Length: 291
Image (cartoon, rainbow, N blue to C red; front, top):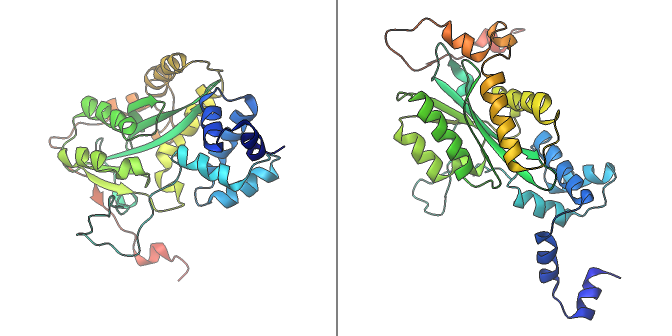
């Protein structure tokens, strides 16, 4: 018997049935499905809900396109798309997509380029989200926050932590993806108050935020996947310990000549005056070496 027929016989609307079902604790099968949707959406960022549904069905899940699309919307995995043209006086155009400045920067000091991203972490009965801000020069995690919602307040809290610990000067470049949280007015205004410039990756190019992607991979492989967290409080304690005491202090990075981020920053010679990162564009022969 279909759900629609059962609702008709009991005199309950389908909307009420699904609303009551979603409020209850999900079972293991539903958690596994949601985990698979999250992983596919983050791995294939250019895939829409139809392609994601096809991949899920190939993996053995019995799921339809509408459910996948609804889950993607609830988890806020849909990025802001660039319009064909931009009209600055259009009051209905809520967000602005910023060009990628990070790829042309030549870093020589800290606080020249910050990179930010959000990822999900699966607990026993829920999904939570981690927002992080890294200094791209030293790979140090300078701000982070855990939350149960993907609202702008989550990455904004991570940004506030970074601003409190670093006090950057005007000229800083902040790089992220095109997610609605980073393009929101509240987040953009907070950066503009600090005199920072915004930079965003292009669609379907996660490598343009590679430093943050690498941090998230390290966090999940060396900490999250190695434990079975049951509660939000337990996760917060261990994630904070990993970031502050292990990743920043003792974990060696090949990109830093096998030094930890803290050690790498301490070895830098302090300059008399801080300056923003310089732009460095590749020449014609570097772009086309065979020409």
